[in-house]
Image (cartoon, rainbow, N blue to C red; front, side, top):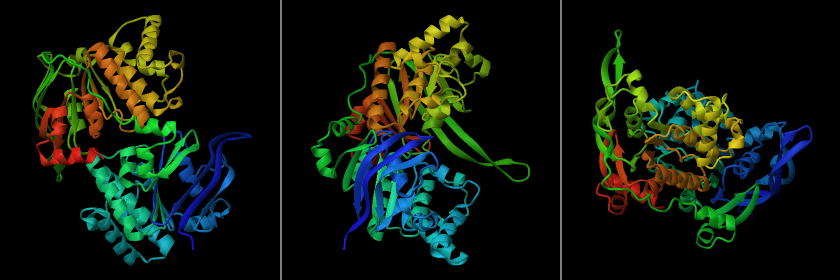
Amino acid sequence: MTNRVLTIENLSIGFGRRGEVEAVTDSVSLSINKGETLALVGESGSGKSVTANAILKLLPKGSAHYLNGSIVFDDTDMLSCSERQLRGIRGGRIGMIFQEPMVSLNPLHKIGKQLVETLAVHRGMRQSKAEQHAVSWLEKVGIRNPEQKISAYPHELSGGERQRVMIAMALINEPELLIADEPTTALDVSVQAQILDLLKDLQKELGMAMLFITHDLSIVRRIADRVAVMQNGQLVEVGECLRVFNSPEHAYTKKLIESDPRGLPVYVDESAPALLTVDKLKVWFPITGGIFKRVVSHVKAVTDMSFSLKQGHSIGLVGESGSGKSTTGMAIIKLVSSEGDIRYREQAIDALDRKAMLPFRSKMQVVFQDPFSALNPRMSVAQVIGEGLRVHTQHDDDTLDQMICEAMREVDLDPESRHRYPNEFSGGQRQRIAIARALILQPEFILLDEPTSSLDRTVQAQVLDLLKSLQEKHGLTYLFISHDLNVVKSLCHYTIVMKSGEIIEQGETQQMFATPNQPYTQELVALSSF
C-alpha cells in the first residue's frame, strides 16, 4: 500500500482565449506523502499558486487550460473529476488556506455560520452539533473566548485571529491534504511563529500531508520536510530541506538563499542634528456608548512615545500587529490626531492645521505597505509620480515630464513605461513607483510603512539596496516600520521595540539585536533567527 497522497506528473497549464494560450507552468512533477510537508517556493509569477489551485481545479474556467499531465489524489484523477465529485473533495478531503483571509471569509456572515456550513455540507451535521464542533475547533486553533468569537464577523477579528479561523475552516473536516498558500505573509513574526507551530501540531494530530506555498525561506527552514523550487513555471530543484539549504544545486536556488536581508546600514554622521523629535506622543481613540454617544473608554493606540531621529539616519519601529507602529507614523505626518510634542527641524508641527502643514508635506513623504492599494489604478504611472509636483510646484508640462523621467531612472524603472498603468507592473515595480512618487519632491524625511513585507525575498533585497543607495545619495532620513527584524537590521541604525502602544526597549540596532534586554525583544530576535 502506497504512502503517497498526491502525485502531479508533467503538468502544463496555460491561460488565454480564442486559441492564443500562453503556458505558465511547464511539465511540473511532484508528489507528497502522508504526514509530509512539501514547501513550494519561488518568486511571484513562478507558477506556485497556479499549480496549487490546479489541484482542486480552482483556476478560472474559460481562460485556464490544462494542456498536459495529470493530478492524482488518492487514486482519483482530479482533472477528469465531475463538478459533483470535486465538491465532495474540496473542503472535505482537501483543505485550503488562502493568503488573505478577508478575501476568503464572507464579510456578511458570522464566523460560526461559515464553519457550520462546511460541516453541514461535508459531514451532514445538524445545527446544534455543528455549532459545538465549531466552538471546539476555534478553541483548538487558539482563538480566545471561542463562544463569543463564533458570533463575530470577520472584520471584528484581528489579522492573526482571521488566519486562525481560516485554519479552522480548512481543517474542521480533518482533510488528508492541506494546501496552505502564503498563509503567514502579512503576519508579524510572533503571530507567524504561533500559526506555524499550530499547523505542525494539527498536522501531527491528524496525520495529514501539507503543501505549503511561500516565498519566505525562513518559514521553509522551520516547517518543511522537502522543498520544491519553481522558476518561470518550471521545477528547477526538489530535495530534502536540509540538503537544499546546505548544498543547493541550481543557480536559482542559490540566488533565493542568498537573497535574505544582509549587510549593514549606510554610514552616517553621528554628530548630525535632530531632524525629527517626538516627545510624549499620545494617540487614544475614543469609544462611545449610550444614547448620547458619550466617551466611555479609549483604545490606547500609543502612549508616551518619545524619540529623536537624526538627519540622514534610519530608525526602525518594530513590534507585533496592534502595537502602535503605524499609528505612530501616521501621527508624526499628521494623518491622525495626537497629543504631545512633534518637532521638525526644531519647529513644532503638532498643533499646525492642514494649511499650515502644506510647506512640510513636500519634505515629509510616505511609502505604504501595499503599493497596489496606494496607487490610483485610473492614473498612469507618470500621473501618479507627478501628482505631488502638481500640488506643490508650478512647473510647465515639459519640465514635469523631465522630472518624472529622472525620478523613474533613480529607482531603476524605464521612463518609456511611464504612460502605462499600475496594474501592468509587478509588485516590486509598483513599490519602486511609490518610492519615485515620494522621491520626486526631494524630501528630507520618508516614512516607510512595511514597504517590503509583501515582496519576494529577491525583490525585497533589491528594494532594500535601492533605499540604501538613495539614502546615501540624498542624505534621506527614514522612519522604517516593519515586523521583519532582519530587514530592520540591514537598514536601520537605531531600533525601537513597541508593544501595546508603548516602548518596550530601544537602542542601537546591532547592539540591541546582539544582546536584547527585555524578554519580549529576546523573543522577537529569537524568532527572526530561524
